[in-house]
Length: 419
Image (cartoon, rainbow, N blue to C red; front, top):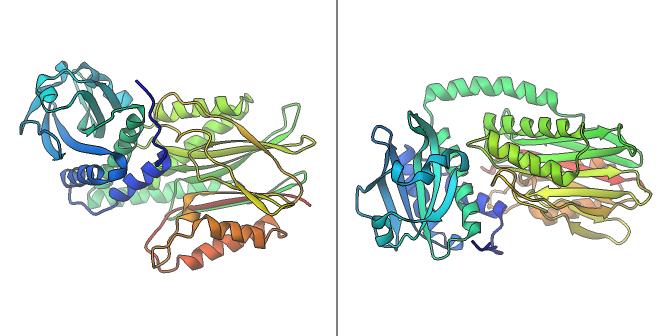
């Protein structure tokens, strides 16, 4: 199957669009899934022309059609298919999404030539296996490899949303868990300030609620021949307690890996597989990781897994470079490759690492704070200590977004090499 790279949308943009679509208020799972399918099909950038919702009947070990939408040949109402007739469904609880050649004659007659489905909702356990409660199937004029990534993102956001449609009693219990998790998370965050020879670093993380999916850490390794400082910032796709668990999982996995001093590319690949295998629902994590070294030219290595592009400010010529992603979101597929890039930090240079809670905060007119305001603060305050730069930016974001309904965790790290 050929790989198709839709240049107009990257994984992060796809996730943001689907998340926005799923952010409404819904009375139940059925209403939400119908709305989601309609919005996905109607959103032109996805290039999806039809969608269907299938629901499992575990006693009969079959899926029945519950809803279909789009300008496509319709499958007969109330049509069902036996799971045994679609063997690939038996592994879907592990893969979550699958693309395969369609063999069902009824579906073929409806113009469905590629079996393109993604699992959504809780996992139903039967004597015969484990299956998603719902399957979402979509039609597109071109079903290529990038379509797999789109479906995986739709699956994750849809499942997170469904799990959020809980009763009031469950909400109370969940709230108690959040309070406990909040204390754990606060204790695990590092100190704001750290100095590493002629580097000064200041980081701050402000959760939107009791706990959040943002996380940062400083990782010092003195066992190598060359001392280095690792800095990571991650952002989990989900919200609340699941996001906090995922964020702490990432931090713990990276810290354990540090003991073995792996290459950054290997670290990211292994972490990607761990997230895919460990989190069946909230799989997606963005992560930026860099290493400050004591080489004579102060080489900085970095990898970016679908994270917001950090700002690299060159003091000498007053220029800015964005440290773009070197790989996709962690957890979207089991096997991914991640490249490692590098920059040379000269005296006075600054790196600003942040999560989207900084740049995507909106004012009352729904205008986003954006990268330009962030960059301007760095340029204006370039001679200040990283702590002062960070706090000025955070204060400006808070002032800018006063009265806005938009909420998200905010994390910002400023790295500066001394003049």
